[in-house]
Image 1 (cartoon, rainbow, N blue to C red):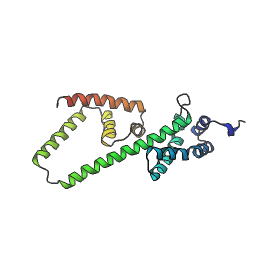
Image 2 (cartoon, rainbow, N blue to C red):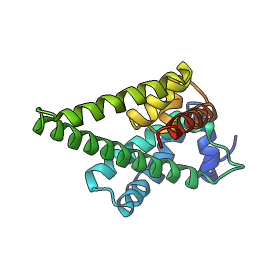
Image 3 (tube, rainbow, N blue to C red):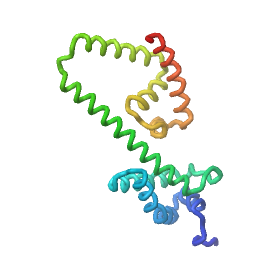
Length: 185
């Protein structure tokens, strides 16, 4: 029997990947406070840091099998998960603020000028035409990434695709869209 007192974080994560709750409890007690402190240093408000630290710990439990000790130390992997959670939260807030500002403008100007209505209609047609150039798979990832501002990792999880596939589809879609928009310059 091996001595678990001397187990490395990497070994604990390997046990977590196999569903070992005791190993996860040890990782949690070793890192939850550090992760929260790290998020606070990144600028997260206290309540958000607490929530994000909990989310990061849940992600560690769920994604422990993806940890590769040859690529990073356990602590590095854990703090990257926390940092990415903070970045994702900032992106969601940015999108929400942008959406609110658009909705406020739309509510304030219900009587749209004919010129504005024409421009909006033309832009909507151009976007629709551009999107129709894409395959259904590319349209899905573009909608999730740009219209819903979802991070690539969430899109991959949501569509049950490898992260590389999501990135490839986005890259190919952007090449097609860029070519389409060149005609309007």
